[in-house]
Image 1: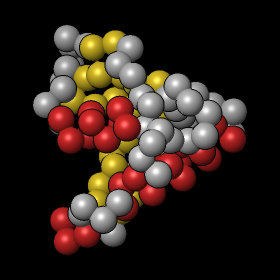
Image 2 (image 1 turned 90 degrees about the horizontal axis):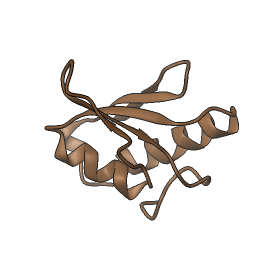
Image 3 (image 1 turned 30 degrees about the horizontal axis):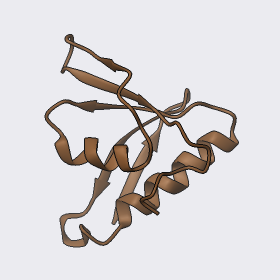
Image 4 (image 1 turned 90 degrees about the vertical axis):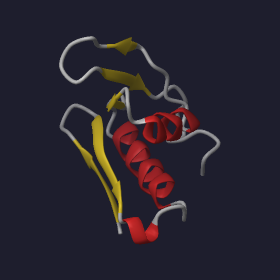
Length: 92
């Protein structure tokens, strides 16, 4: 129903929720669990989101992610590090 990928250096991406199961909090649950796992592994949590993906940008902001770099290069990507240590913001 929902998944997100972790790359070896702590980057998360490809968050997906089946359209039939959206708006049920699944993305927030998946993000919180993966963020916690990466931090427990001692890695910083980052993600890359295309500027046009407003839904994902807002969801990540709820988890305490902040824009630290806006790339003008390939696919105009924003990079976020997580700032709080519990795996999420006020979203879970």
